[in-house]
Amino acid sequence: MRVNNSGTATGIHKSSGTGKAKDKATASTGKSRDSVQVTDSASLREKAQVMLADMSPVRMERIEEIRDALENGTYPQDSHKVATQIVANALAEHPWS
Picture (spheres, rainbow, N blue to C red):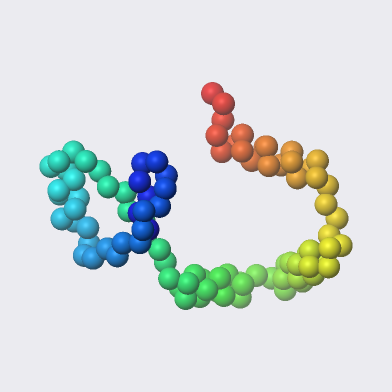
């Protein structure tokens, strides 16, 4: 998918080659082109399985408890605490300096 300067997607384009020729052309014309690489889902799934295999059983039990509580609607939520953490994370990522 290609995204133009206005942020809208214009379609899906398949890339061929290594892009080295594009880099040389970009350097000579002064125009730059952005590119995106998408990792296939099988590779991501394999990485996730490796990470899960390395997790301790205690952590997996806690994750399952939280997942079950979320599915049942019984997970306690403190909206003030959630909002505070969202703002804190946003400020940490983009400080106002």
